[in-house]
Image 1 (cartoon, chains in turn purple, blue):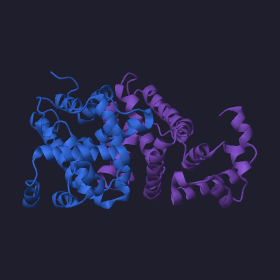
Image 2 (cartoon, chains in turn yellow, brown):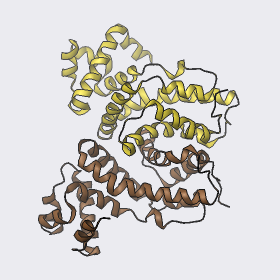
Image 3 (cartoon, rainbow over the protein chains, first blue to last red):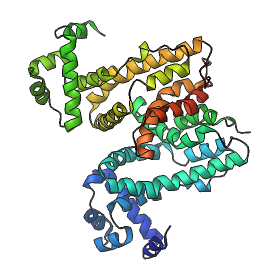
Image 4 (cartoon, each protein chain N blue to C red):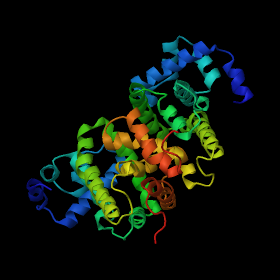
Amino acid sequence: MTEMSTARRSRITPEREAELYRAVLDLLREVGYDALTMDAVAARTRSSKATLYRQWGGKAELVAKAVRHDKPVSIGDIDTGSLRGDLHALTLRSDDCEMEQNSALMRGLAMAVHANPDLLKAFKEYLVEPEMAEFRHVLRRAIDRGEIRADNPAIAFVPHMMIGAFAARNMLDEQPPTQAFLLAYIDAVVLPALGAPTTTS
Amino acid sequence: MTEMSTARRSRITPEREAELYRAVLDLLREVGYDALTMDAVAARTRSSKATLYRQWGGKAELVAKAVRHDKPVSIGDIDTGSLRGDLHALTLRSDDCEMEQNSALMRGLAMAVHANPDLLKAFKEYLVEPEMAEFRHVLRRAIDRGEIRADNPAIAFVPHMMIGAFAARNMLDEQPPTQAFLLAYIDAVVLPALGAPTTTS
């Protein structure tokens, strides 16, 4: 986080910030990204548009940070002692109901990203990159423990494997990914591709 | 194919059918699914709307069949003697330029599917199911050759792995999947997950 954004953030309390993010996600689910306006966020949260712009710069950054804030547990807080344990814990952060809601929300945002370069940029900066950095951290620990080889070419594809499972589940099976689906996918695909143990000892 | 649809199909020549499908794909790229009308297809192809409806039933079936028809080579025609060879040949069916065009088209249709249940149904019937059946055929041969075990749990996830790679590539790397990306993904992820040879002997 830059000093600039720390300075901007310090002007509201964490509780107020969380409340604003919840309102943004509610509005996103109700009207979608394109129809979401800063006016509506200001009205819903009884804040001034000037405050919103000062704090977040614009709609894209506000939406990306609201989605980021909604993640129940940071990947970085997970450390079970095995790669399988870490990836399973990661999956179990969200229950099936949350996953279904997020799946619909992310589908809408994935569409909006293609028409809004500023949203794509904010997504990469505030959502994809931090999540990928934490993923790399989990994989680094698995390498250090000797569970996977540092030169395994599948390491670079772990984000594609995980995100792809979400996307393909919706498309192929006409249902949102469930915990059971993702745990089975991790054991059948992700761990074998990485050459990692598929049972937790 | 049912007798009914065979009877419907026989009324126009294969050349005329191909021409109609090309026009539908052009229109899809120009205006998207929601704005595409049977009137526009009729005008563009100088055919009557009555003919279009008699032949295809409706917009959803026409679009799904147009996309299906555009596939350069049927998976079923590929038989290289190894699973790696078959999956690579499958990838090399489309060059990078075609993949970029198809990627944009499929992204648009993936969005439309969520708002149009009849399009989802037509996609499953005319596009997903036939493609999955051919995939199962390719995997069946690999099992018969002893390249993969019949009880490998990754077999059920091959469609998710392949479709997921396409979807995630767009989202994570901000570029359409290229042949080089997909070949590397097959060798690093799909074949190791299946426990199949990663070199072609």
